Length: 322
Image (cartoon, rainbow, N blue to C red; front, side):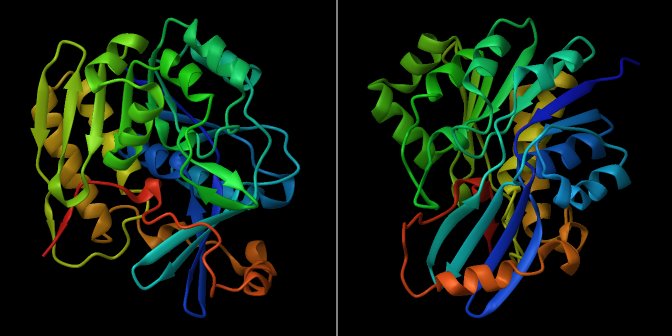
């Protein structure tokens, strides 16, 4: 049996959740949720990321699950703060890692069948790296969330990046939330079929949250998938990453038709949201790694909303709460 190998590229993050006066820290990023999902499906997974020397303990979870990590040079680790205040949710990005370069990716390409790009902000992957990836004869999947939000005074705001075009040219299959896609289509002044044709994208997955989602192909097919009910929502963070990775395994690597692959992926995302797949406990970070961070955030305060993002794009997925 052919052994599939996937390279997951993007920031591995320290994620802090702030709710009232409570603070918690966990491992985050597309590399975490997609990387663990690929590996748990029996796909040999390699992560390319930049984590600062003082934070390398972040990578222990990957090592425990037999995932190889190619860690690059950076003085800082990407650090997100996710604020939850009733129905209002917004994010801050106090620290970002150095951009991931093509030199980090190139040695791994020949032994891989899928390159999965999961940038969390526009400079997560260097611009020239995207252009070089475009020239590769490898299947490329892209979560475009990082190109529809920008860091303004450490706050995340929904803005389309000029780097989006480079990313789309490199991609064969793309995932976006409904809100992200709307921003992209307005920016590109294009319909969805025109966007796919312009950038020669084979498929795009669009997530509609509790309403399920669609897969649209370059041939004009539109396949809908359902959202699975979740009796108790524990944590939706990373559900979109889990969904996309599972879909890629079933459809691209195993050759399943679009409809059943999307349904399988949607069911797994629901399990994740219910706390039955990648759990908070598995991602919890030791106090020694996060000492002092709560004080840093407390000094910012959470009374004002420096930049409102109603739902962080990395938590968008297919689920229903019943």
